[in-house]
Image (cartoon, rainbow, N blue to C red; front, top):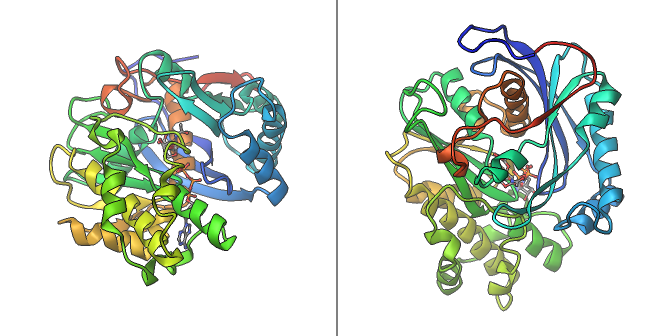
Length: 374
Ligand SMILES: Nc1ncnc2c1ncn2[C@@H]1O[C@H](COP(=O)(O)OP(=O)(O)OP(=O)(O)O)[C@@H](O)[C@H]1O
Ligand SMILES: CC(=O)N[C@H]1[C@@H]2OC[C@@H](O2)[C@@H](O)[C@@H]1O[C@H](C)C(=O)O
């Protein structure tokens, strides 16, 4: 049951999960949170999908409930999450993001695979899930949702000046945070949106040309040159002139690889990397004030070519979140732990400046595996 607003509530140990767009595996992390503040970070775990499982998920991408292949993919998601989450002890609640298969906030909605009620029964824990649907129903983009956690992270690291969190996964998303504001839903506290494709097109190219999962350490891009003509064509896409908040489906820019089809492998890799960097730089133009630094999370922070392309164009440091003492591999899983506590306590998880939703709302459904209060 929710407790009356305004009274400080004790922090709880919450478990959060993320199965991201790159389909590599499930990240799980513990956060001690009272929904407003972070009190500490706990254990983490990673459960990689097997090649067979990944193929099942890949075949279901872009599909909606009841469509072919979705039930099989749901079994994979459920099994992998139950397996890795059951390793954790002494947690009071879990935030289960699931696997996004399709995302059309202005069309058919948003589809995250995973049954939170079944997971709650299997784990004997209250599970918060389906975080995005309510936001979409209320006029929002349904993404990004990590910004309310980024606000808490900014306070946790003691930031005093505006800063940005940049997640470079399959898709990129940026959160501008003004830590001088009292709460994430306060006017001017946050601005968030997806920047554009990040690693997904680079991975697709590497798969197609070299049979490799990614351009490890940007090694191939480092040998090539960015082809300006292709870059300009890419930036002409109407997505980049849309005002934030805005969000993207993983495959929204799948045709990008076509823009580099005629190029050598190295030039194609360099150009797609340049496009991901340019998308971020375009997005940064929306920041209300210049950020004091950009803290980068997600796999893209491990690509030195991508990091350098952004750093040379910006007037502030662009560094992995580790420089601020955070964990760039687990930040999204941690976000859904913190958000789960917010949902359980009746607090908002998105607001007009993060998703374009009509008013600050708390998304997410709670399934109680056992009776209990959080
Ligand atoms: N050493 C590296 N060099 C280059 N790229 C890397 C490296 N390590 C990871 N990556 C890239 O990061 C990707 C994984 O990033 P991440 O785990 O943040 O994605 P995700 O969480 O699945 O995506 P999203 O945040 O969009 O849901 C890989 O697919 C790869 O493209
Ligand atoms: C619909 C969906 O699952 N979107 C993801 C995806 O991955 C990155 C980007 O696109 C972001 O918008 C979001 O995830 C992060 C965790 C978020 O909601 O903040």
